[in-house]
Amino acid sequence: MTTIQRPLSSVEENDKNAIVVRLQRNQKDLVQLRTKLNSYRCEPKTYSLYERIESLRSKMDSLSHSNSEIISSLKDTRKTVNVHLERAKRHLTEFRRLNDGVEDYFNICTSH
Image: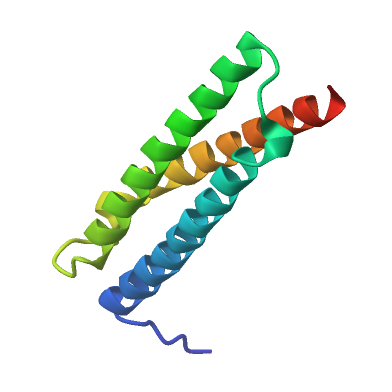
């Protein structure tokens, strides 16, 4: 049985494209999360909730900025995907944490 190996650049290009698509999807999700937080249902009723929502918004801004940076870096064809792969993975993990934090906050707000 023979195996056909794809050129390394083709594999890297597919990985780059997959990461870029995922990060673009995360960017859209960040917009939706911000819209959700700006909803009247998420108005903070206590000072601790106010601090929490401000922290979440700050994290959203930071993730959105780094998301844009990673996407533009990955679109730069001169760099390999390995340079940004670990950074993108950390970013996706941080996004999941932020999403969980927004869900927790939303649950707290709806229970008050």
